[in-house]
Amino acid sequence: MKKTRMALLACSLGLLSGCDNFLDVNTNPNAPETVAANLYLPPMLDWMVSTPLWDGRFVGRYTQQWMLPVATTTPDVWDRMGYLAGSDAGGEQWRTTYFVFGHNLMDMMARAEAEQRWDILGVGYVLKAWGWQAATDLSGEIILREAFDQSKTAFKFDPQPEVYTEVRRLLELAIKNLERTDGAVSASYLARGDKIYNGDRQKWLKFAHGLLAMHLNHYGPNKAGYDPAAVIAAVDKSFASNADDALLPFPATFTADANFYGQTRSANLAGFRQTRFVVSLMNGTVYTGAVDPRMSRMLAPSPDGQYRGLDPNVGNSNAALPAAQRPNNFFGYVTNPVAGQASRYLFDDKSKMPAMTYAQLQFIKAEAAYYQGNRALALTAYRNGINAHIDFVNARNAEIGSSATQITDAERAAFLASPAVVPTAAGLTLSHILPQKYIAQWAWGHIELWMDMRRYHYTDADPVAGRQVYPGFTLPQNLFVDNAGKPVYRLRPRFASEYVWNRDRLNEIGALEADYHTKPLWIVQP
Image 1: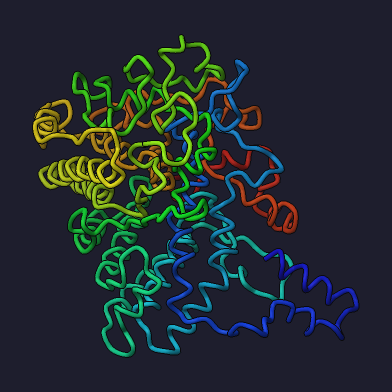
Image 2: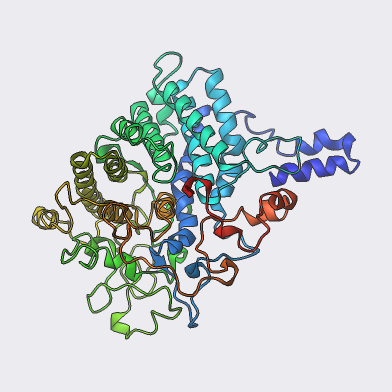
């Protein structure tokens, strides 16, 4: 949007006679002016997987997946559910939706439709739906209808219900196109650009149903239109096992094609440490007496071999501990690793990163079945989710040759045999389902994880069991001053594009107010 505004501004200042030449600045006489539809995909798929990781450095602190210890007693602004004014921190999804996808995605879809490549068109609708869904789930009101109107230099924001309606429409079109086998549908052609499913149209179809299930489940438990049966039906048409997981591999031949969380790019998580909340979900505190075997394969031990998490209410909480008790970084070291050093779980240069997993969808099904009143189905899906995520952890550690050992069948069986972890169907509660989904999404599923916590307003209680849905989670004691005592519910629109260029439209939605980031999203309001 910024480049378009600049070009139009130049034209409006009396340069009309030269506008055509000005806008032709990107013409390359040594390269084709058109690009094959399948060649648009690789960078967009990379950004679909990597963008949540960029913003997860900030969102992950709102959800207390991790924190960034600082040298003062006052915690960092993000650990206090605040934001950094005048910065693009937390604005990567905005950039991806409007700049990285933007006209590139529109061009790909137009070319695919003209050539009757319905599989690529279907993937395009999936990407478009994902972009709008992720953007609105992070920021609430977003620019939808006027987003790519090149006749405008200011862009109106649309309310979240309209965005949700559009996402549903796009997913229905995605499913319709991915079901087609006529025209120029070709697995080999799609595979040239498809680095996730290698041209497998059926797996993209499952992905579309999975994204639909996620979308529909966001209506619960706050919206009257929540339909658990529709959520379950969408999950059942989606992933059948971990073999369907949407995983992006990283060749790691140079820095830019290495995992965003890997050793080569370790500065992206420099200083970050796990919190005591995530440790409490796995060390037998929340699930009384049941130590999760995944803890030692996902989280980082302290030098003394024990697993601890930091208190986000204490800025210098790491330095306050004896050196032997300070949690290592996520790569497993006291200091940042260098390329080639061994790492673990999702923190290796070549760790495959997910966009969606079977485990994640099974927990969505469990929650929907719980609200449907089908506790037996909820328990089955819940257990499937835990089992699948144990397999996921083993697979990620195995593929990178991690020093973390594989979770054994005996460890798995002992964990699942604990009634604190897997109760009877009648005893299953949301405070079982949602924390296990949190574990399965830890370090990668930042947008969905934050949406879950906001749907339950961070500290809501299960209406049936009376127990807090996220047992032990507490809001920061020293919330950022601009919050006015309220928790965070949204990221602000990207500073460089909106607060610099689109302030009048921001004012219309109240986004110039200091506490705008605390305004609850429509989807989480009753």
